[in-house]
Amino acid sequence: MAVFDGFLRALALAAGVVLLLLMTFTTLDVVMRYFFNAPFRGSLEATEFSMALIVFLGIAYCGWTGGHIGVDLLEKYLNRPSMRFVPALIALAGAALFALIAWQMVVETSYAWKQVSNMLRMPHWPFRLAVAFGSALFSIVLLLQAIQTIRGVPPKHEGA
Image 1 (cartoon, rainbow, N blue to C red):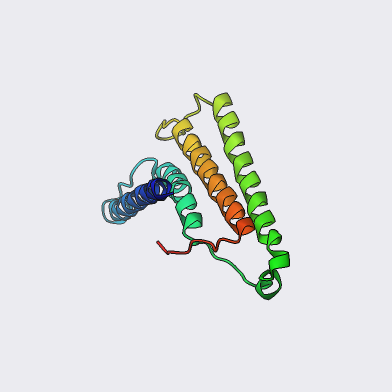
Image 2 (cartoon, helix red, strand yellow):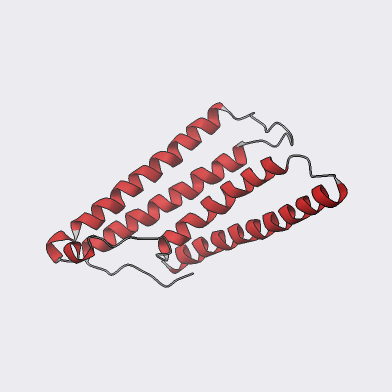
């Protein structure tokens, strides 16, 4: 599990680097737009592609470390040993959903392999495959969490 944890951490750090680059790019775009009346061409497309990388490279690590927002409305009822299966079922449903998202993104990418953006003419496929990859990893994380819940192992919440 240490290798898996390190891999997810590396992907989250890569997402952080993309976020830092996007922040720099956006700041420069605003400066160029308002002070020199010369905005960057295709800045919206670059932002959209960057956001896909930021979200889907970091989602699995966020789930792995328990960084997602959770609402504990029913915690006192679900904390009983007889109800331990409910959080496991929720995690399994999430795993199935993200596995389906990953599969559909791969299928969609195979049909739209040559699709490019309007302004920058950047191909869509690398970003779609990043969404598929991140969704598949998050699905694995949710599956592992469901198994741990069923076994009675407390979830890992070390923080990022």
